[in-house]
Length: 167
Image 1 (cartoon, rainbow, N blue to C red):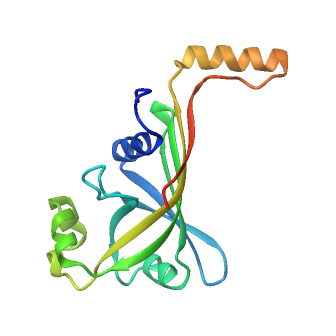
Image 2 (spheres, rainbow, N blue to C red; image 1 turned 90 degrees about the vertical axis):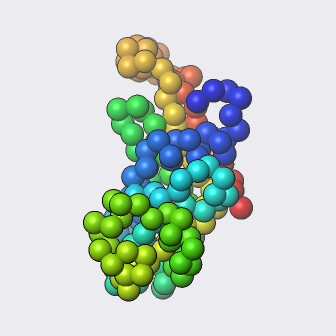
């Protein structure tokens, strides 16, 4: 990420590059449950909405209908990039949006295509997000952590850490 990017632009680039997120919902008993999902957004101009295809009969659909507050976590440990998204989720019945987001990979999960009765479109409205984009090399990170262990001070300037308020 270049320093000329706004925090919102940096957030979208991180999400786009990671693509797979863990959506955490709350069950009826209050337990937290996470499911891996593929982000369907094709471009950064989706506003503050992340799109996913899910099964209409899934635990995700049931949880979201009853308790819409969710969290999405994205991680790319090999690149030292992490994103946590606080949001509200909702099911959307929009054939045009389904068509826009549809791909041949989605066909594997929903063989009936965009008219598959089990296909549900999940919109995740971002309230705020927090991301960590570590730009330092692994060697520099290890050096700074060793230095911190010796001095008792936390390592500084390892990368970009931002909080982004979307709504």
